[in-house]
Image (cartoon, rainbow, N blue to C red; front, side, top):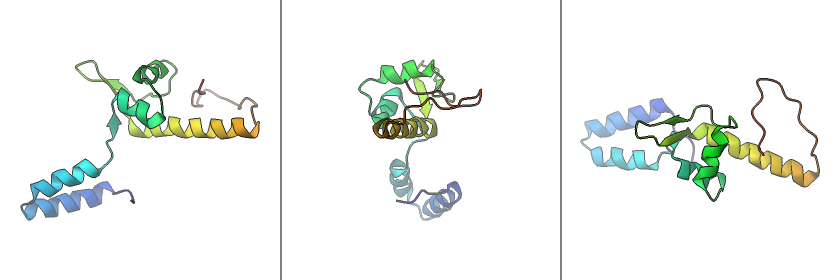
Amino acid sequence: MTAMTAAFYADVTATLRKAGRPDLIEQLAALLPKATLTSTEAAELLGLSSPNTVKNWLAGGHFPGAYQTRGGHWRFPRAEVEAVKQRMVDLRERNHRGDLALPDTDDEATPPLL
């Protein structure tokens, strides 16, 4: 499925609202990926067995946009979790090829996965 732009979503929901179909607005919203994830959802997306691993990676700088709710629960931006997942895939592929040279890094580089 192709990603829906915010403008298109706004148009669709406005049309559904005018048609008196709030039920369809709710169904549509349930189909869209969430912008933020819980630690459990982030762990599942990353293929990790424990949400604590995701929380531990916070100290390593992997999720700079993560924040805690008033209740103390962590929320992780989906885009950052997906970026970490892609780095994991890239590292796995490099490892498979035997390309284990350390990458050139600078202060702006993303943290390596351990």
